[in-house]
Length: 324
Image (cartoon, rainbow, N blue to C red; front, side, top):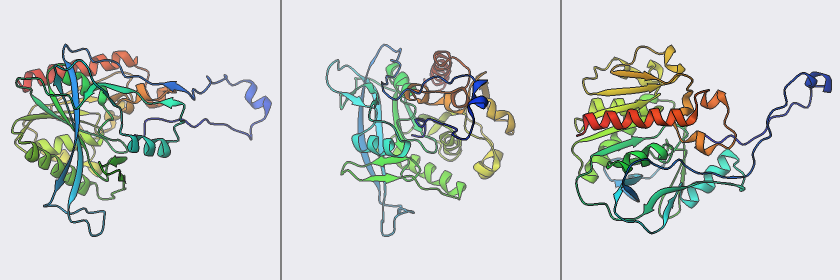
């Protein structure tokens, strides 16, 4: 979850005269109870976590591990109005992300708006898969995931083991992120993870969205798996060193890309493209709500509430047209 930057910067070599003409930076916030914007839909939300084991694939990063383990989280409408609200992260994962990102204990991560292990509401709920970016986890776009669930969708968020910043399994094991120099291998592994999850959950017709490298995985999975009928790419980098030959794949399914200014340096994206003026790469994440000290360099100059409204509306409009 490389979205919290807590360290203050100083320059002890500059003289007092050098500093006199510089504006005084705002004080760094070192304690806060963080909160997430509430979803706007009419339905209450439930969530539950699952450990899935793919016995047909070995773990490429652990010697002697003959299977690949994944953690997934389901978010869905529920009729429950009481119970325990799920934490933003499990205890072990939160402890690890605090260690990695030097997050003070005084900064309290939010709780979600979803009731833990609540029963799913009766009826049909279109399914959407979410893929996280690099240095992030399945929780990295909880605000958008909750929004979709509050409007009647079931969302499946996947921790891609070794490509998530950290993954906690039910027995307490924490698996950290690795740096895979072979981006084509990472894309292929993520796509295989999605295919396995769809098989395990018996899903046959779904949408998908992803942020950053998760946007890459979304496009690749759409290409490879006929069950994924539509997708949204949140500022995924459309460049050949990352995508390999994906940038030359014909995309015949509905595809929407929401982009920041970084997309200007990429080849043209397929499908429909909406650029958010004033956005930066981390605009397309929960970062604005989790970083007590956001900066324009990270999150852009766009008003965060406006950025959220635009993203929510774009996803809801797109999936209402493609999954119903």
